[in-house]
Image (cartoon, rainbow, N blue to C red; front, top):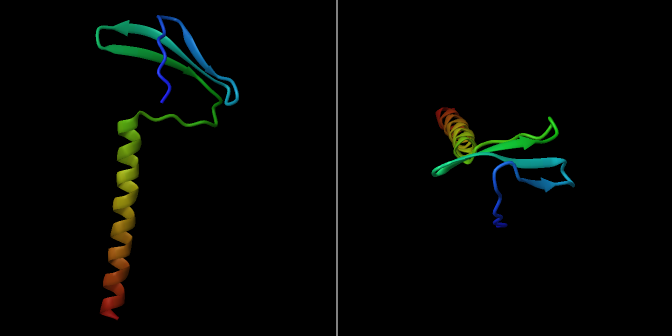
Length: 74
């Protein structure tokens, strides 16, 4: 993990991907980031991404369970 110190309105660039991350605001224990990136890239907060992955895993388990139940009944 790369750890950088940035002040308000300072940025970090990832030029190969066309991404700029700027510190927009700092309030006690929270910072606000502005992200400029190509529209085809998707960004998620970690907790949202983990929930999406959990939902996908749950759906797959349900599909496998349904298939096994169907096979057992046949």
